[in-house]
Image (cartoon, rainbow, N blue to C red):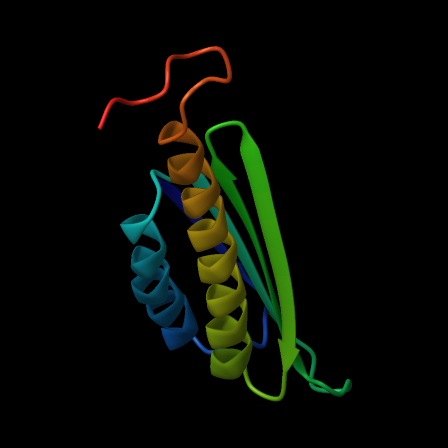
Amino acid sequence: MRVSVVTGHHVPPDARAYAEAKLRRLEHYAHLEEVNLTVERETALLPEASAEIVLHVGRTRLSARQEAASVREAIDGVIDKADEQVRRHHDRVTDRKGRIRADAEPPRP
């Protein structure tokens, strides 16, 4: 998994390590090829922090965005949204594999 974490000028230095640690949670359900996380903080705006994530799972592109009062809240929110999307994608793929074709013989008891 290639991880790219981009932070703005006003983001605390420990936010990058915190984000990378949280991103490891996403590997549980799918093989992620690439993850791009952008964290920004604007002191003049409310909400003052925002985070955006783009995930590439095979041929599927998943994305989420979260705005919050603090950088950690924004990171937690966007990781939660991405985790839900990855879990739904995983469920869709695995559910499809268990079905039989329409022209196949029915299973024998």
